[in-house]
Image 1 (cartoon, rainbow, N blue to C red):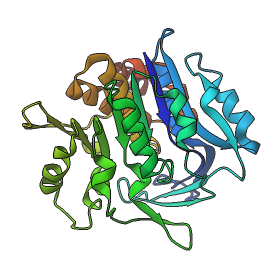
Image 2 (image 1 turned 45 degrees about the vertical axis):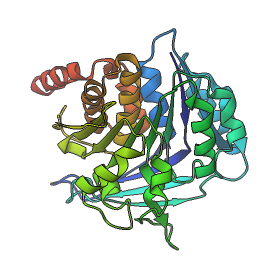
Image 3 (image 1 turned 180 degrees about the vertical axis):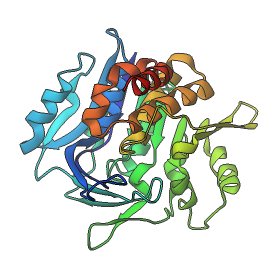
Image 4 (image 1 turned 30 degrees about the vertical axis):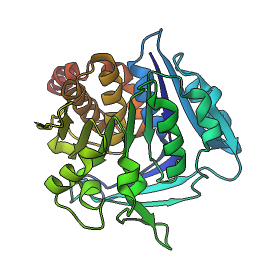
Length: 328
């Protein structure tokens, strides 16, 4: 199986609040992030016969470091990674310890969109995952070209809205804003992924969730995934007769949540991999739900790499984690 992954990398600076009862000093961790969460997840799930083709630009200053990381995964073909001018996008994430999932995100030095000329050589794949890490990863015209290039071969496209619904203010803070052309972005995609906050702010009409689903699914979308953090995920599937079916998968826990960074990226990558293997959207979403919950128990990309082997059977990590905690 060959999977192509498209999206921007970044340098994450995580500002993690001090736990209750401590001296109140926050923990600051700097690590690679962005599309690398998707890549590490997929590479951890793949076997020796699979190929992962990432396509993105990286600053000259960070190129060697990123390539060194990619070379640790034999499934990764790094030929789609190219150098770009300027610094790498830096994202500061300030988490609100009092509000589940609450955070302030600041982003600057975002790279230029990935041109279709860089993507086209890697579209001969079994599936294409597009993750709008920065919101400027590709333009709408490039997405149209990707759709035209892959539709005759029925190559599944998984599209994660992620930061596409975010603007940037004068202080580099990200803020939610609607998309007037959201229907064009959704058109003719196999699977569409968004968080419930992204879904709520997607349309200028401020549709409620049920109305948005009824507006979105006729756009030739087979499956819509609405992630809900620790509360799980909703899967909307559409059959050949245009009948919609809703599946609500509850959240799971592998232990105390330490860092939500990258959980959506892990979810999307794990889901798409399992979907391509099984062609079962609900089973794939359940697997991805577990994988994202496992990621929440570790900090940053380095934490994800440490639990990479457990991603192949994330459900087993529940028992292992509980046993470890009892042994402490």
